Image: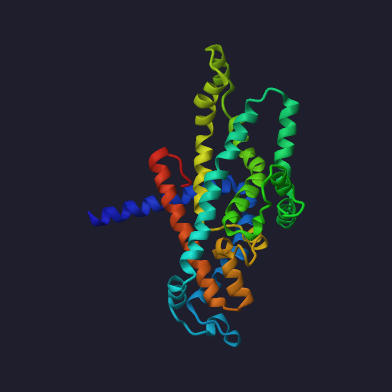
Length: 317
């Protein structure tokens, strides 16, 4: 019985090898298109991964990565037991979840409204106005925020003073930092984020809309029973991706909006890694914090993907 089983396995292996070879030969043009992307990822993403080991060593410049002494989880333990740990986690997760809760539905709502807009000229104007902020650089965006929120002549404070209120130094108050960060992100990304939902809506069978109109369905009923189910798989995939990078709050804007007075709310993992790693030259410690951040993201991505697969039968893999 054992001999027969081995023969069967061998024959099956040969069959799959031939089948794989035939498939590769048949579609070789498609695989050639993939080749530059694969080479790029190998050179710039996989080969540099050897440097991750610096998180488990006490890095010494003259000895290099391979020659530096191995210290195991020392830097991870140092970070978790430091007084900064919980403040960094709370700030990072606070901004991420605030951003997700407030920013994730906005592109969906915008796409649903644009999809139901009959006036094409108005639709184009709205799309242009909402897409434009995406192309503004982070540095310029932060400059605009500082100008708009200026306590002297920023239009927000001018409006507050017109209403009889005292001006607020928004960027000097820690309690306003998360709101400023999230709202500016929504303004910049909502229009661009709606493009993918508009593409998903364009893929819905037009006969469904015609049948709904014949049955006398209102716009709200069309949105509820046709549009939302139509874009739900896309929304689930984007939600999984968003949760998979929940610990990656954008460094640039967070750092540029940061000052000593709002540091209580604005110090997040990415800004802390920058300060510890590049300014204080604690390379091993900052690498350990970055790796810890990545591991949390991977765990979240896999967990949410598995949960989404069970609940909605939609997942990344």
